[in-house]
Amino acid sequence: MVTLCAMALAACEPLPNTANGSGTVSATKASFNDTCAPLRAPFQKIRADRDKIIGQNVVGGAIAGALLVAALGGNAEDAMKGALVGGLAGAARAYAENAKSRGATENSLAKFANADARREAAQNDELVSTLLRMNACRLDQVEAIGVRARKGEISRGEAQSLLDQVRRATLQDNRVVNSVAGNRRTYDAYVGVLNANDVAAANRTRESVATYKPDVSKVTRTSRGQAAISTGGRASGATDVALARNSAVRLDAVSDAHVESVEALIGNLDLTTPT
Image 1 (cartoon, rainbow, N blue to C red):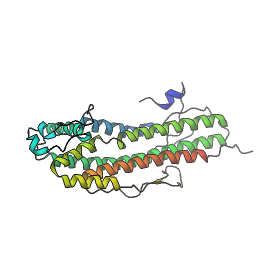
Image 2: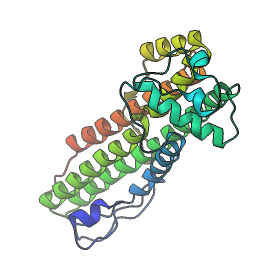
Image 3: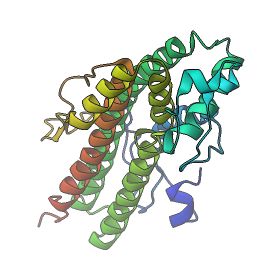
Image 4: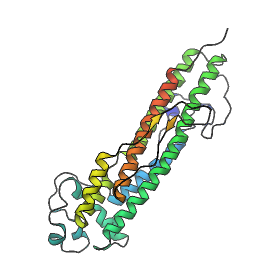
């Protein structure tokens, strides 16, 4: 990971370490050390872990005959009946191979998929909590810049430069979160498994995902160390697989609110030095 500090400035001094809502303001030199960036690490790890489940080189598109039961040694023609073709096929086949390496059989594959989906949903909920800490950290960074500008420690131009760096860092946060929340490959694999084992469950899953709307919004925070996002209740889903996908949709909505709240605070920030 390349830090925003390294891209923007040759020498860096810290802004407040506000991941926990506390810290001290650096000296008068206008410099940016992204103390919030370490909070991206859980997202990067989980994305890498999920890639391992279905492989890095899953071929999408219409792949007729890409049958996961064949990977498990079953009767592909009888069991699949053409269900796993198109976009689901490559991911489902790769998932079946991975599940087999973890002890899955043809009969237990659906249980493996549901268990993995439940784990994803729990991870996504944990990532929402991490993202709220990241949001609080970014907002604390913005407010610290405003304090320094109003005290005359940095010029208005220096403050704007620092705020631009916080903007860029926040957009990078969003991209990192989206690498998890926007990754549908495991979902496609799980739906492929449901298609092969329980078409009704697959249909309920699709309907649940199509109709789910997260209750997420930007709010006004009341103190440092707090996020400015209301996440609503946890995601719901008609099946384990639907819950996994819907929790990712909720995570994505929180990420969008993260960007919006940081931008709103920057837009309303007072940089005027009292006379």
